[in-house]
Length: 94
Image 1 (cartoon, helix red, strand yellow):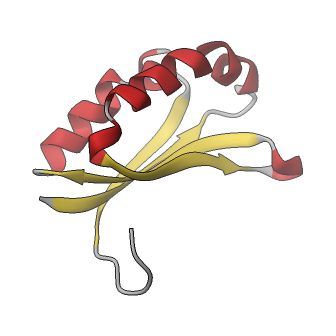
Image 2 (tube, one colour):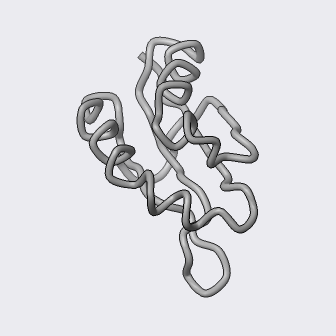
Image 3 (spheres, rainbow, N blue to C red):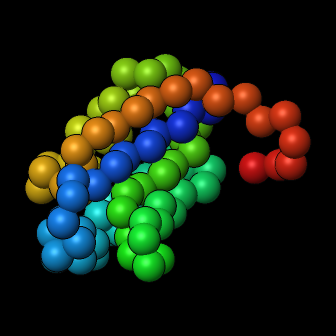
């Protein structure tokens, strides 16, 4: 198993879509809690939610891509940009 960062940046002016889809997204994440090490919203101006950040433990990048593809936020078209990167914790603990 390896660690990955999944950084998902909302499209501009999409807070209403995020809020309308939030409960489905949270239920999806709860159902996959075993692979989520830490997750939460990224904040923009005025502390408004503007994206999602996950640190995931997965077999490979393909598993992270599948996780993202099935996320209700992704399926609703919320994200304008998604980045997946490998991650190695050097300081602190997950």
